[in-house]
Length: 166
Ligand code: CO
Image (cartoon, protein in one colour):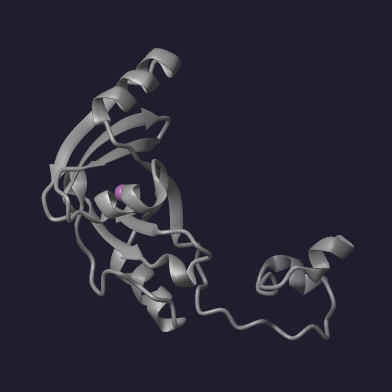
Protein backbone atom coordinates (compact mmCIF):
# COMPACT_ATOMS: atom_id res chain seq x y z
CA UNK A 1 0.00 0.00 0.00
CA UNK A 2 1.33 3.45 -0.87
CA UNK A 3 1.64 6.04 1.92
CA UNK A 4 -1.16 8.01 0.24
CA UNK A 5 -3.48 5.01 0.08
CA UNK A 6 -2.68 4.25 3.72
CA UNK A 7 -4.12 7.61 4.73
CA UNK A 8 -7.38 7.23 2.85
CA UNK A 9 -10.28 6.59 5.21
CA UNK A 10 -12.89 3.91 4.72
CA UNK A 11 -10.63 1.49 2.88
CA UNK A 12 -9.89 -0.77 5.81
CA UNK A 13 -12.10 -3.67 4.85
CA UNK A 14 -10.42 -4.08 1.48
CA UNK A 15 -7.95 -6.95 1.06
CA UNK A 16 -5.15 -4.34 1.18
CA UNK A 17 -5.63 -4.01 4.90
CA UNK A 18 -4.81 -7.64 5.55
CA UNK A 19 -1.33 -7.07 4.16
CA UNK A 20 -1.02 -3.65 5.80
CA UNK A 21 -0.66 -2.54 9.39
CA UNK A 22 -1.80 -5.48 11.57
CA UNK A 23 -2.66 -3.05 14.38
CA UNK A 24 -4.98 -0.94 12.22
CA UNK A 25 -8.49 -1.00 13.58
CA UNK A 26 -11.12 -1.97 11.03
CA UNK A 27 -13.43 0.88 10.11
CA UNK A 28 -17.07 -0.03 10.42
CA UNK A 29 -19.01 0.74 7.29
CA UNK A 30 -22.70 -0.08 7.01
CA UNK A 31 -22.28 -0.55 3.26
CA UNK A 32 -20.29 -3.66 2.42
CA UNK A 33 -21.04 -3.94 -1.29
CA UNK A 34 -20.82 -1.13 -3.83
CA UNK A 35 -24.45 -0.17 -4.44
CA UNK A 36 -23.96 2.12 -7.45
CA UNK A 37 -23.64 0.04 -10.62
CA UNK A 38 -23.56 2.74 -13.33
CA UNK A 39 -24.20 6.41 -14.01
CA UNK A 40 -27.77 6.13 -15.29
CA UNK A 41 -28.13 9.73 -16.40
CA UNK A 42 -26.92 13.26 -16.05
CA UNK A 43 -29.96 15.55 -15.99
CA UNK A 44 -29.82 19.07 -17.39
CA UNK A 45 -32.64 21.57 -16.90
CA UNK A 46 -33.45 23.59 -20.02
CA UNK A 47 -36.07 26.15 -21.05
CA UNK A 48 -36.60 24.81 -24.56
CA UNK A 49 -36.42 21.03 -24.93
CA UNK A 50 -36.51 21.13 -28.74
CA UNK A 51 -33.67 23.64 -28.92
CA UNK A 52 -31.57 21.60 -26.50
CA UNK A 53 -32.18 18.37 -28.46
CA UNK A 54 -31.23 20.15 -31.68
CA UNK A 55 -28.04 21.48 -30.10
CA UNK A 56 -26.97 18.01 -28.95
CA UNK A 57 -27.84 16.57 -32.36
CA UNK A 58 -26.06 19.24 -34.38
CA UNK A 59 -22.94 19.32 -32.23
CA UNK A 60 -22.60 15.72 -31.10
CA UNK A 61 -24.81 13.72 -33.44
CA UNK A 62 -26.85 12.72 -30.38
CA UNK A 63 -30.02 10.72 -30.91
CA UNK A 64 -33.13 10.81 -28.73
CA UNK A 65 -33.59 7.30 -27.35
CA UNK A 66 -36.67 8.04 -25.27
CA UNK A 67 -39.00 10.96 -24.69
CA UNK A 68 -41.63 11.13 -21.99
CA UNK A 69 -43.82 13.50 -20.00
CA UNK A 70 -43.62 12.58 -16.31
CA UNK A 71 -46.85 14.05 -14.97
CA UNK A 72 -46.06 13.64 -11.29
CA UNK A 73 -42.86 15.67 -11.61
CA UNK A 74 -44.35 18.14 -14.09
CA UNK A 75 -41.55 17.62 -16.60
CA UNK A 76 -40.91 16.43 -20.11
CA UNK A 77 -37.64 14.65 -20.60
CA UNK A 78 -35.58 13.52 -23.56
CA UNK A 79 -32.98 10.82 -23.05
CA UNK A 80 -29.93 10.91 -25.31
CA UNK A 81 -28.00 7.68 -25.14
CA UNK A 82 -24.26 7.86 -24.37
CA UNK A 83 -22.81 4.33 -24.16
CA UNK A 84 -24.84 2.66 -21.39
CA UNK A 85 -25.89 5.96 -19.82
CA UNK A 86 -28.03 8.93 -20.79
CA UNK A 87 -27.97 12.67 -20.96
CA UNK A 88 -31.42 13.63 -19.72
CA UNK A 89 -32.71 16.97 -20.97
CA UNK A 90 -35.49 18.18 -18.68
CA UNK A 91 -38.03 20.94 -19.10
CA UNK A 92 -41.06 21.86 -16.98
CA UNK A 93 -44.57 21.31 -18.36
CA UNK A 94 -46.24 23.40 -15.64
CA UNK A 95 -45.34 26.37 -13.48
CA UNK A 96 -45.42 24.52 -10.14
CA UNK A 97 -42.94 21.88 -11.31
CA UNK A 98 -39.79 21.71 -9.16
CA UNK A 99 -37.80 22.08 -12.39
CA UNK A 100 -39.67 25.31 -13.20
CA UNK A 101 -38.66 26.63 -9.78
CA UNK A 102 -35.10 25.48 -10.33
CA UNK A 103 -34.87 27.27 -13.68
CA UNK A 104 -36.31 30.43 -12.16
CA UNK A 105 -33.84 30.39 -9.29
CA UNK A 106 -30.68 29.03 -10.85
CA UNK A 107 -31.16 29.12 -14.60
CA UNK A 108 -30.36 26.34 -17.04
CA UNK A 109 -27.77 23.74 -16.16
CA UNK A 110 -26.93 20.57 -14.30
CA UNK A 111 -29.96 19.52 -12.24
CA UNK A 112 -29.26 16.05 -10.84
CA UNK A 113 -27.28 12.85 -11.28
CA UNK A 114 -29.03 9.51 -11.67
CA UNK A 115 -27.09 6.59 -10.22
CA UNK A 116 -28.15 3.10 -11.28
CA UNK A 117 -28.67 0.61 -8.45
CA UNK A 118 -29.84 -2.99 -8.30
CA UNK A 119 -32.15 -2.31 -5.36
CA UNK A 120 -33.54 1.22 -5.00
CA UNK A 121 -35.19 0.52 -1.64
CA UNK A 122 -31.97 -0.88 -0.15
CA UNK A 123 -29.89 2.06 -1.39
CA UNK A 124 -32.47 4.52 -0.02
CA UNK A 125 -32.52 2.77 3.36
CA UNK A 126 -28.72 2.91 3.52
CA UNK A 127 -28.84 6.71 3.10
CA UNK A 128 -31.58 7.07 5.72
CA UNK A 129 -29.79 4.76 8.16
CA UNK A 130 -26.76 7.08 7.94
CA UNK A 131 -28.89 10.13 8.75
CA UNK A 132 -29.14 11.33 5.16
CA UNK A 133 -31.99 13.55 4.07
CA UNK A 134 -34.20 12.12 1.35
CA UNK A 135 -36.91 13.60 -0.85
CA UNK A 136 -38.72 10.30 -1.48
CA UNK A 137 -39.29 8.24 1.66
CA UNK A 138 -40.12 5.24 -0.51
CA UNK A 139 -39.14 4.25 -4.07
CA UNK A 140 -41.66 5.31 -6.73
CA UNK A 141 -42.16 4.90 -10.48
CA UNK A 142 -39.76 6.91 -12.67
CA UNK A 143 -39.60 7.34 -16.43
CA UNK A 144 -39.20 4.43 -18.90
CA UNK A 145 -40.55 1.95 -16.35
CA UNK A 146 -37.84 2.47 -13.75
CA UNK A 147 -38.17 2.64 -9.97
CA UNK A 148 -36.57 5.74 -8.50
CA UNK A 149 -36.01 7.74 -5.32
CA UNK A 150 -34.49 11.20 -4.89
CA UNK A 151 -31.93 12.03 -2.21
CA UNK A 152 -31.76 15.60 -0.91
CA UNK A 153 -28.67 17.63 -1.90
CA UNK A 154 -28.35 18.99 1.64
CA UNK A 155 -26.69 15.83 2.96
CA UNK A 156 -25.10 14.73 -0.32
CA UNK A 157 -22.56 17.50 -0.85
CA UNK A 158 -24.87 19.73 -2.84
CA UNK A 159 -25.87 17.16 -5.45
CA UNK A 160 -29.47 16.14 -6.01
CA UNK A 161 -29.19 12.37 -6.48
CA UNK A 162 -31.71 10.08 -8.13
CA UNK A 163 -31.38 6.36 -7.40
CA UNK A 164 -32.53 4.46 -10.49
CA UNK A 165 -33.47 0.79 -10.55
CA UNK A 166 -34.21 -0.57 -14.01
CO1 CO B 1 -33.62 11.90 -13.49
